[in-house]
Image (cartoon, rainbow, N blue to C red):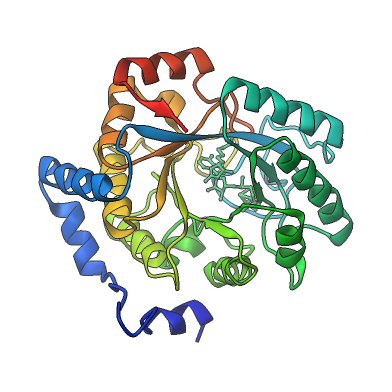
Length: 327
Ligand code: SAM
Ligand code: DTB
Ligand code: SF4
């Protein structure tokens, strides 16, 4: 049995057993009238967070394209003919300049992404240097590098890494329909290594890939029932990429996205829920509904990894109109 499954049945301490969410319970949340669901999520949110404060991270793709994996949604897989060009690992000077610019514009965390199945040791050494230097600017650091081998998480921790992003992406039951080059259990193994090294876990998923509501609820259950819930839970709306197998997927009802945010908030009350990819296509009103449903972090800056994100002026106006403060 996988370590995450084993640990999930044991209480964290004798005094306070953790609530183990069942699929039926999470499906029942999804089935609530939307107003009831949002009210419940907002109530939980206010018990745990300042409801008017949103954490902002800026993303940078430090190694783009040419990835060996076959994730059906991804512009960076070498297996699909997309517009994303393969690039080498960015020189450290460019990375630090981008981090400084992000800090100057008001981001508190800098997230560096690499299109790898996992890092080779000599590539990891270069990323460790990036982490140390971004940290020295006074920013929180996050990296997403794919699957880690034994010992690599400890090196990242020693370099001062604050968060490692590694999404479960979708329900274990649906995983094999969108990714065949690695498994859901592989993802859990890396999450265990990150957790054991003492790095904060950032793990969430993508919705709108053709999964059922039951699959969406399954993903939330699997995240919430990790030995410890992730500190950060990114909820991405599929950005359809021409050339990938999911390019022509029908757009999901946006309220289903809001329901997923609310379910994440209720089941993971102490986690930062990140309104992630897909924001550029959302109206301001839909984003406000996501914040009301308990989202309290987002990506800030005009690019995600290879696709667009709202420009800073639009986000600054949105914050002003909603009376939100950036943290
Ligand atoms: N290669 C590493 C990995 O797979 O973990 C790191 C980079 S990968 C691009 C990071 C995350 O971006 C994925 O886990 C997925 O959730 C998200 N992502 C990638 N393409 C996406 C798309 N077209 N729409 C929404 N989210 C996407
Ligand atoms: C996450 O969950 N979403 C971000 C971050 N973690 C690395 C990435 C979104 C990528 C969207 C598609 C792209 O820009 O290539
Ligand atoms: Fe590679 Fe990550 Fe894209 Fe999958 S999601 S193809 S692992 S970069």
